[in-house]
Image 1 (spheres, rainbow, N blue to C red):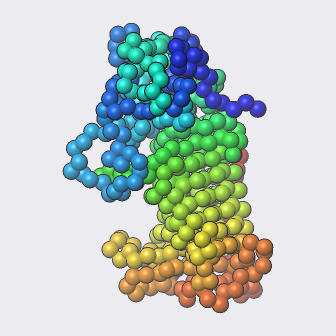
Image 2 (cartoon, rainbow, N blue to C red):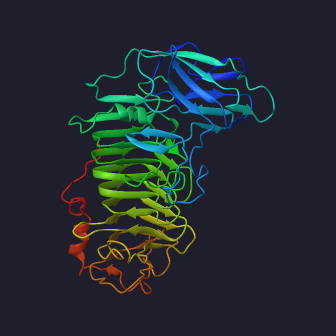
Image 3 (cartoon, rainbow, N blue to C red):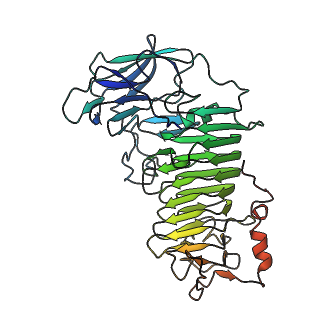
Length: 462
């Protein structure tokens, strides 16, 4: 089983991908330069792509990547800021982005999405100040540095139902986003995107896709990720959140299976944001920070591990969890914002771990200034859950002005420690409820049924 990494061919003292003179290159390729020692990204100079003499794309390194390029600034949007930042259109939405990312000796250049086309020949020039070497040796780039490659004659046709992603260019696409952009919106035909083993450092976002399966070759060795959070990509005045590494909006009948998603920044930084109906997440690793997983709509999550740093689940949607694990470094594991007349987070045969030993399952902080003060219809139901590092009160804090808690479903049944021994409920928060048999058998059986939780949808993992 081969891992898809870029294949580099040496030109002067720099290894290039695509190779100088390469043919049959995918138009979604990134440009990869491998040096003898770690390069340093400059603050001036251009990367320019030409089709004959016509400029197709330019990356100006004098433009900052973000108001908070290290992800450690304000998480609030400054709408009076008139600075121009690096911007890329991803899946129809603007994101701030890094034009170059350096990992060890490798510099990856990210062109603006969808600038290259099939059946064209391109020349790339890189200014001498764009990349320099930390050891003072020549970086192999001077004012005459350039290379040329040609793209494939054509890509997968509209009738195709399966395509493959591999970063070394040996498959239909080099990037996950490139393959997703190919998939038609609102399709009535099921299509599958296969992702080969490899590390795909890219920001992924898409809208209004349906009947789509995105399947990795290996859960632990197919890794999609990006450094992003609410400081690097603060909110727009309107539109979806821009802080996740991988997110989508308005989808239907989508399945993610068999790969890892990682957000490399801390803070409010989702690995995954789900916004759609009938979404399946199966056999996945999700590595985020605060709000590591945000959900809207309906989703079924199975055999999946989620890591986060508190409020690890931010739940607006109806989600049925089956045989999955949630690991939270501190604080409440979830902030469940269920609205009236839908179900919230229901977890069956799952494991919840608070790594610092004092976590709670869900909190309702003072939110009295919002549309839903304290989210009075919040629902989180735990059935046969193994737990570790959970405080004796189990739930909370529930804060703010007094409100009607009669609609809260902070419920648990047969909660155990990690060895499978029953947990004491003696100190549980008073607004939570501990279900017991036989009195609550009807509730337990209802909530064990995904279709009951998900509005009649009976999920099937393909």
